[in-house]
Image 1 (cartoon, rainbow, N blue to C red):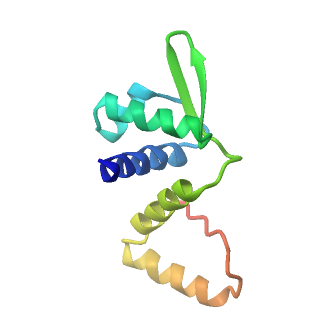
Image 2: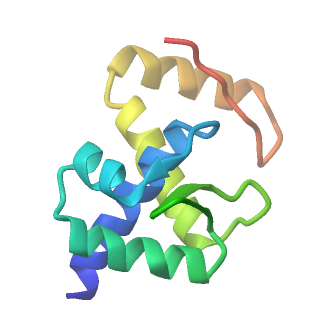
Length: 114
């Protein structure tokens, strides 16, 4: 069961990280990632409780967005998955490796506009 929640958590976070300026209802998140509402609801409530996701009430619904001030292992894992999905394209992977060799810093940000 924990593996299912981690997979769902990763998908929720990937969606929110990919749309950092947007707010989603829990139902919209469930529809976007194609997972049933109850599972997304439980995972999202957990993310709100740990302050990884911001929430605000709008009438009967709860609007969710990524908390830009909170970074933890869940965010790191979701960002790593996003990076790996981008690097599936071999040309981008070659570019990434070339840049990584040139930059001698252990941490850097590579912005790609595709």
